[in-house]
Length: 238
Image 1 (tube, rainbow, N blue to C red):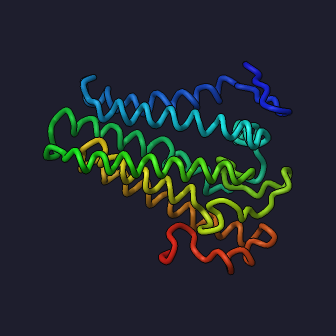
Image 2 (image 1 turned 180 degrees about the vertical axis):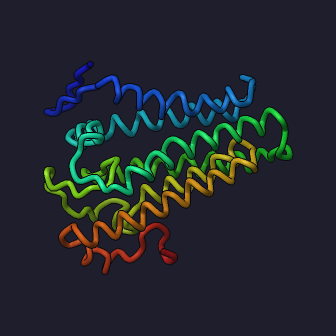
């Protein structure tokens, strides 16, 4: 067990948390290369590098701007008030769905199911992923209640956030996540991986709807916030 001090907050790195970090940021993306059975896949290496580097940057920004949020996200398993449906959705959209996507993408690369990709399409996919990550980082930096689970954080004085991207849509990080997952198969040049990407996006959309309903019912002032910030994910759509 390791303790890291960030500002006035001490973050205890337990074996379980360390395993989660390794699984999310290293083992899952490397599944791409294992499924492909080859190392000469520059798109996969680019995707892995971008994912890890931007994830690390986001955590550094979070630790400096909202150090108490580091402890909140680290202790998500023991947190009180987590919605039962969220315990089911999170593993699907964060572990199982990505795992299936990476395996299918790797097998597609190995067996050549999809036609040769266009470089311009891959670069567009990369640009969308970068912009989506930046949107997520902006949301995390703006929202000190950016928990990894859905719960009303009474113990942390949960309040409505109306700054940053929350001025335009109510769930900007989910919007970024959907676009990033849909762009991932495009960067990797695999059409078949779009199938799990769509399913992951559907899971994120479901979580958005359930979380928004929870906030309207349980977080003071959220219904009034919805009257001024009308859209959950996509301005002018929903």
